[in-house]
Structure formats: structure tokens, C-alpha cells
Length: 153
Ligand code: ADP
Ligand code: MG
Image 1: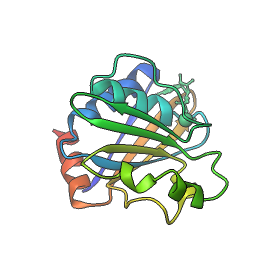
Image 2: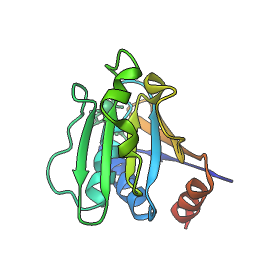
Image 3: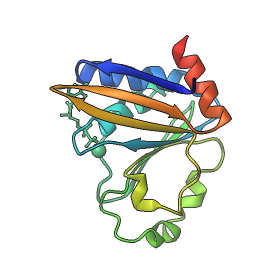
């Protein structure tokens, strides 16, 4: 209970999973994305962002820390904290504001922002299985549980 996992055979399935996840989110969400480099965190995020209606590219905000997608249906913010040297930097960029107003925040390398982030509703882990991937989604709040229940239906 409060956990969902499945096998993702290829990139297309990872994008589809992200899109499906987006359809289960109705009041915003803070989502931590765990997994090694190349595990598929950005690919999954692309599916989420496109699921909310974005039609252009989704690139990794490795140098900018955040890429905003202010869409008709939903504000989505994609963070990649891989290059963050000091969590204090997040204070200066006004990170708190991004978590407000029922936005969807997807955060790669959240451990680098320890102490500066909102509590996660979902903790997602992507793992290599040979050339494919496994995704595990764990609820970390009541609204996270609601999302996972929808995902299972
Ligand atoms: P991360 O953001 O975790 O570093 P990326 O999403 O940038 O990873 O890159 C993942 C790479 O793995 C991409 O080259 C993508 O095509 C590939 N990929 C994504 N999902 C799968 C999958 N389910 N099976 C195999 N390859 C995948
Ligand atoms: Mg990435």
C-alpha cells in the first residue's frame, strides 16, 4: 500500500509512465526523483510535462537548476540539483515560491538540496534492469497516497 512499481522496457514506456502519472495529479505534488545518471529521471519528467500539455522540448536544467513550464492546466517546475554546490543557493533563487499554489515540482538529485526543499508527496526511484528500467513510486503524504491509488486503477 502506498507503493507502485513496474517494469519499463524502453524510453517510450518511461515517457508513457510519466504521462500517466500526470493524469493522476490534481492538486499539485512535490516529487523527488532518485536514481543513477541515465536511469531515466529526465525522460520520466518529459512524460509528466508533456502529459500536462507541453508540446516543445524538455531539456535537463543542469546549469540553470530549474526549468519552468507554466502551462494552461498546471505550473510544472523541473529541478536538477546535480551541480548544486551549496543548498543555500536555493534560498537565493527563491525556491520556496516554486512550491506554492499547487504546482508540480519534479526534483532530480533532491539530496543535494537537503533542508531547503518541501516535503515530498512522492519519492520515485528509477533503476537499471539490463537495458530497461524499473520504477518504484512511494507515497510520502496523504496526497501522495491518493495519486498512487489513482495510478493503480
Ligand atoms: P537521468 O535524468 O536519470 O540522468 P535521462 O532520462 O536523461 O536519465 O536518460 C535516460 C537514458 O536512458 C536515455 O538515453 C533514455 O533514452 C534511456 N531510457 C529511458 N527509459 C528507458 C527505459 N525504460 N529503458 C531503456 N532505456 C531507457
Ligand atoms: Mg536528468
